[in-house]
Length: 185
Image (cartoon, rainbow, N blue to C red; front, top):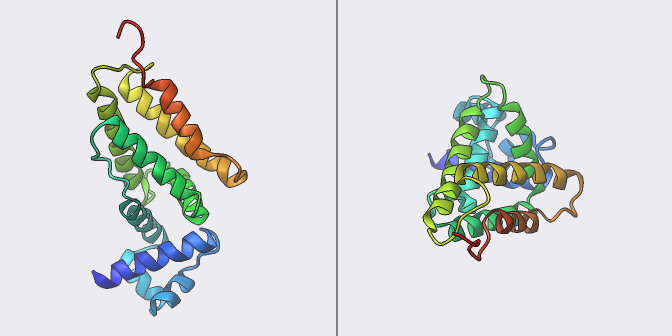
């Protein structure tokens, strides 16, 4: 278990610095002091290793879908997006694996399905929990819109790093779920 964690931390560092396409199994293995075959012993395939790296990234970043309340969910999500701007290699990995996970046989598919569901549930619960406010859309729909915009902004940011992903998400949430209650609510 300790060796697996060491591999994940090293892979996070290498991919964060070098990017998804430039991070080879050999380089990750060299950092850990094992062979590429040993990496595959722990993870089975490069795709499974990279999926585990994304899980570890979420764990390290504190992306905890179990947060309670919209403000906690909003602030935590925006903080993660801000941090993502510091690790473009991991954003690239996330975006590429998300596309690859459309294939039902891809090892990352279940990770993305579970992650998306937990993230939407956290936001929807946050939207539902504030009886004094109401959103423009149903809570689950708002959560899906926020997630879709965040994923799309990551792609835009990879092409144009001047895109303020976190600022746009904050503004979107403010529009979808205003701080001041709307008349009649």
